[in-house]
Image (cartoon, rainbow, N blue to C red; front, side, top):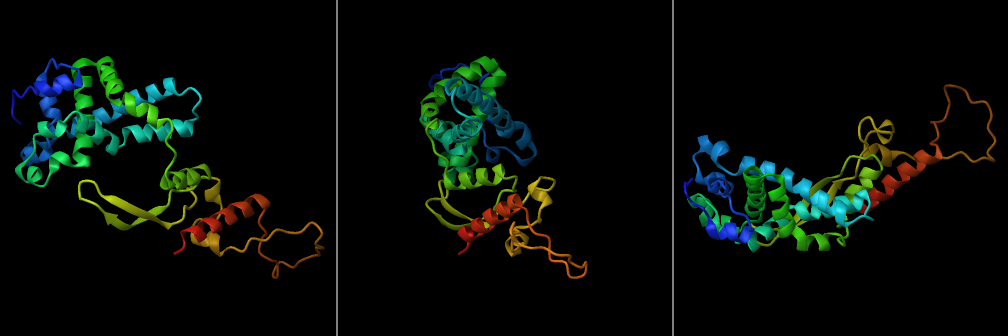
Length: 266
């Protein structure tokens, strides 16, 4: 890592001047630029970890204050939109962070300065560096200034199909589905993926839903039966007893999973 790089122009764009400029240089150093034995100590990875948490806390507070009528699900969607790698990479591009990165030769040659994954990570690392250098108050001001324009848009974002499916499963006590990538287009640094549910959601172990049949295949194989109130019932021997009938609530659960499986079918 090149000591003494103050990144004066970047500090001006950030609107924050570091008391310790080496912290900023540390936040801009990719693991490819340092020897393998010193990557933990000298690359931005640990600062990224810290900055991710600081960013999440600050954005959560901003959303809580600015969207007083939003429920938990709406706040979570807005939070995820604001702290995801794509948004962080967009912020990094606005700051022209790519031109300030410390990259190894091979990473620089393959366009590392323009990769969403790297730019998003570095944006979080810079926030972590500001937090260490100036405290939470300074980090809050920088995040609010950089992410403010995106905050207003996040409040109107509708859930994408994948998120809708995840929330549907979570709300019913199910494990999230497993996905398979069926198509990938676009450049390597910004691919457009087409995921498709490979298996429908299954009950979580220990949940109410999990007390019912354990796999989606088992649920689909069930033939739900609900007894009719007008049906006459007589004594049934133990040996010839019919399988237990599902209660209306269990029937609805099985039926919803069966309908979901049809939607996932080829």
